[in-house]
Amino acid sequence: MSAQTTTKKTGLRAWTTRDLLVTAVIGIVFGLIVAAAMNLGIMLWAATTPLLGIAVFNGAFVMAGLTAPYIIRRPGAAIISELVTGIVMSPVTPFGFMTIIGRLIEGVVYELPFLVTRYRHYGWLPMMLGGVIGGTAFFTMTFPMYGAQNLSTGMVIGLVLINIASCALGVVLSRQMSNAIARTGVLNSFALGQEMQEEV
Image 1 (cartoon, helix red, strand yellow):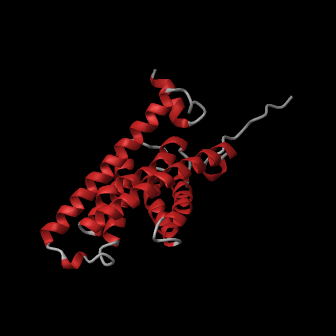
Image 2 (tube, helix red, strand yellow):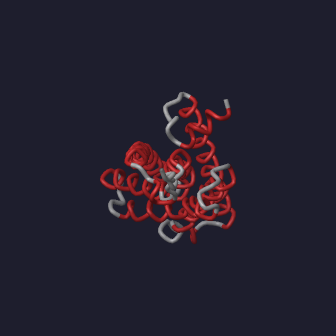
């Protein structure tokens, strides 16, 4: 009788229906959260400058892009969750279809640090790099639209620093929230839940 061998699926082939469903749910939940944050940001824009609203609430966008890959740990998780987030947001924000494009671009940037590590490392460094670089790249892309050229250099630097702090906070909250959920046992069938079990 010949021994049967099984090959563990890796990369995109490792995705399961459950992975897709949970990633979609994460995208939907954060789509609603980020839409609310964006509308709060618009209120802040009216009182100050649009760039301040984006800088302050950009951490919410970061959470939307990093929670799914941190929990699911599959290639493309950031892109898929951001796509769903953009679809949910598009009807309830002033930017419509462009919201989906923006979310996809950020999803690609969030994905890059995990791609570089071949999806083997989900520690603080890749998450911070993805969150801060992705969030800051998005923030600086809004400069021409919202008149950054009309602001003083000091004000622009201050806004960038606020944005970086917001993005870093988004990374911290994303990890802490995911870890807290994993400790309840709800995520035991996912990589993060199994990691938490090993630490106990």
